[in-house]
Every structure is written in C-alpha cells, then in structure tokens.
Image (cartoon, rainbow, N blue to C red; front, side):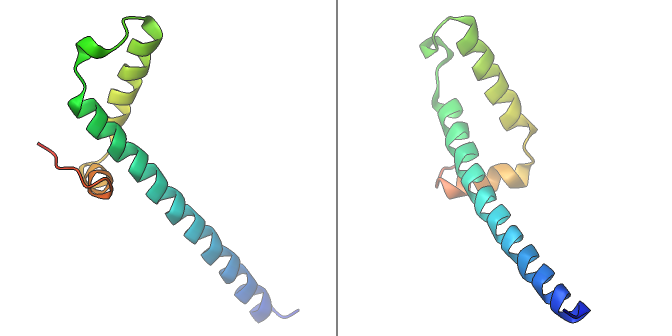
Length: 84
C-alpha cells in the first residue's frame, strides 16, 4: 500500500470521526438547551428539599453558566427558546 493510499484511508477515517463528533455536539447542545430552558422556568420552591436534588441543581446551574455565550445561544436555538 502506498503512502497516498494510507493518507486517503486516514483522511476518510478522520472525516468519519469528525462527523460523529459533530453529531454528538448537536445532541449535547439539545440537552444543554433543554436544561437551560428548564432552569430558567424552574421555581426553586418546586425542587425537592433533599441534598441530592440541591447538589444536582447546583451542578447543572454551574455547568450552564460555564458555557460560552455562543454555545448557549446555539443550544437555545436548537430547542427554539428565547433567552431573556
């Protein structure tokens, strides 16, 4: 097998991996968008008052706050939400 054939095969594999990563990004953006909408519409009084629920809400909030503005915008766009 020549170097040219190996490079073509590597390029094809790399292209496939990039496509999988882009699909995974779309799924994660949908999750992040749905989570952001949920948090925005959630009243803290509605949360169960056990430590596990409080910890999970805190992690979710921190994770959403850590997203870049562009990523959050993309996520909200995917779930067709408007940000206040």
